[in-house]
Amino acid sequence: MDGKEEFLKEFGDFYGYPNAPKSIDEIRSTEFKRLEDTVYLDHAGATLYSELQMEAIFKDLTTTVYGNPHSQSDSSSATSDIVREARRQVLDYCNASQKDYKCIFTSGATAALKLIGENFPWSCKSTFMYTMENHNSVLGLREYPATSSFGRAAAFAVDINEAVDQDGASRSSLTSFKVLQHPVQIRNEAKILEGELIGDAYNLFAFPSECNFSGMRFSLDLVNNVKQNAEKILEGSPYS
Image (cartoon, rainbow, N blue to C red; front, top):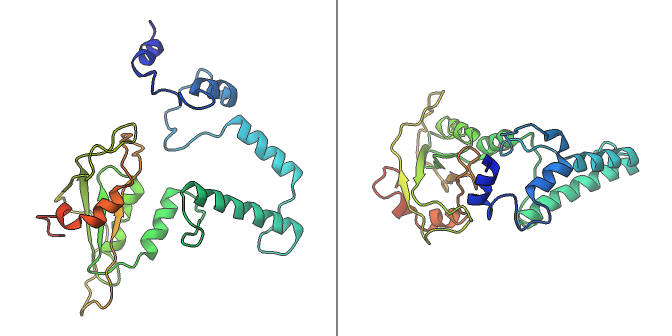
């Protein structure tokens, strides 16, 4: 029995999108023919495009005239229409109302997180909490609360003691947290706010739905758990 047969014997029920129209082996042989005899290990960080996608894109670009979306012409309207449709599909996929959310295109996850860090209303009473298993660029967000012109905010990591199972089901109704008392490493000195803060203080919590390093999955219920159980989660911490 070769290595693949042994793997399928143990994990066959979960391998290769068993309930999908095509298995992973069929997708690889028909849409990723260039991967023959090649091992590609960065799929979670940089998904490869398929031959079918490239064929569809080539056909679209060679049969449609796209122009500057900021001008007024048929080609401009064609560009505006396809961009608007792409935004709608993203919001629909995320079950997000177009009345409450906007889809913004960036060059990648790092650029998107940079926008959040630069525009979040940090104050000396704000808190930035993030899970230990996270995107590198999430860790870079720590620089913003630490150097805000409105005073240094708190930034710290939490450990998720009870993550969700690999099938996506939560192991418990209330995910338990442990606040890690590690010093936050930052590049710049913090600015101190003089005087009392006026207005509301906003906090930010960052976690991945699935860590692209370890593969650990986190339930989206974490958002509500943090909001509803903040005092219990942070009990005994200086941030409580």
